[in-house]
Image (cartoon, rainbow, N blue to C red; front, side, top):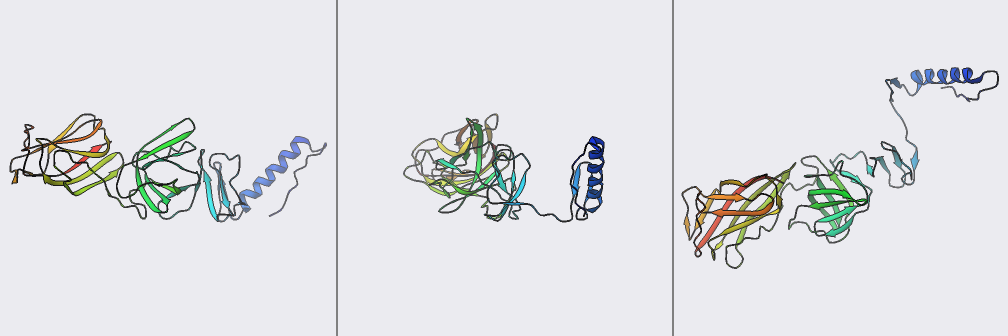
Length: 289
């Protein structure tokens, strides 16, 4: 393609400059690597991005470049640089995270446009670990991210190689997490045969099975984080044993709104448990958070 030096003269003036620029764009329309330009869009059969050794210091939203040091294509979201071109469903951020708890950390930018309830998280903390977002909020220049509490992965140090995904099952994501439902109403340490949760969007799914010796007329388990179903959810338990006997009548469970408490009763009239003998509850629950 021809090269043009756009240099107006006293004779050509603005009119001459305009003609030269028009001629340049006319040729671009037909000859830039077989490109097509229409409605403000440039379509290329092939193109090469200019390489840089570090992120540009004054980027604009939507900027894309090739980082020649990390050998990565990167794009600017308006708040942070993300690594492009992943085939595993994860979006890796270049922001540095600061651990604030076993399941909480902060980022020095607003990432709430793509990180929110139910976002999957992958990070390195000696080993690769996973989590799912309970809440994300921005204030005072940082985004605070709280993950659902679980016993499979604990954040010990500042997480590195941090990646997010809003896909259902990005590569490696476990789907279900174990947690301690902290049983109350049993003596000693009752057996948590199953105490797991999964998150899809803003819905929390629980699968629970706890058995042991009763020492109270109550039976309480807890969700990993606060439930927000708008009002208490009342439903049947599924399977229950009271004082060693299987309950054949319909039993009751109440998931408390704006709380982590899940109460269990021996019938739908909220009857109490026997404070001795074997006590067991098995249930599943889907609730908004």
